[in-house]
Length: 296
Image 1 (cartoon, rainbow, N blue to C red):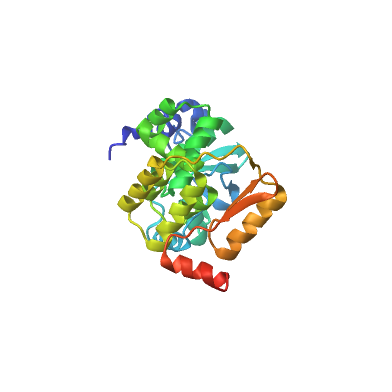
Image 2: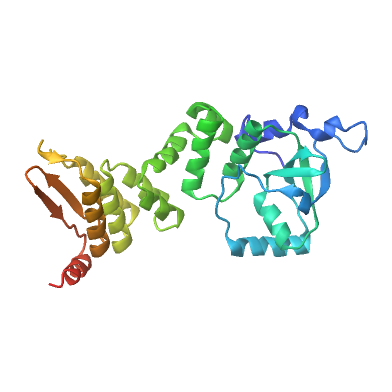
């Protein structure tokens, strides 16, 4: 099977470089150990990859893979780097590694490489972006880490992972969304299409309000895009100069009110001990809940 060129100068280029291949350095010991060869390594001597960008693994999927490994073995070897005498660290293949442990395997086939931390981080991130079923936020975090920790520009990153620069930019923008929305993306409560629509809303409070509306009313992506467009076209309210920043006590009051009414309450403080509290609602059901909380 022909390898896809999408990795560019990323993982495949690093793995095919003889300078990163420990088997090439040991060729004098065994003529069978040439660049690209596979070694059988004891699982107990392999430690997990600290640079692994993936944080969630579905237990059911791992169990299915473990069962497959019991019956058929490991078709695709993992990739490790040698740390010292008879000790290794996983570079890529975390799912296969975990499933092999679940299957009770004592040894696992592996490509053995030498790589410094910088190369290892890039290899792990690129491999996971390309092959693992990461959620959109994990992909975005991986892209951001490649930019920050591997000192890549968006253009260089585009070449590494074989994605358009605009696609990478869209993923990176997800990280600017409020934490509640990012968690909603990770948990599959909203799709990438919903998230892209929310990005176009400038005010974080409006983003959260529309996010809650999506969940409460099971809004489609198209309807969400319409709401986002309407929010964008609304003229931003000019707050009078008398508005003052909220104190820690005010912020606590705002948080308590929001928790009590189960909506994002707006709390504004003005000079001369004045201010306003706004309790928004996006449906009749939500209004009923608010009224019951107020005992009206």
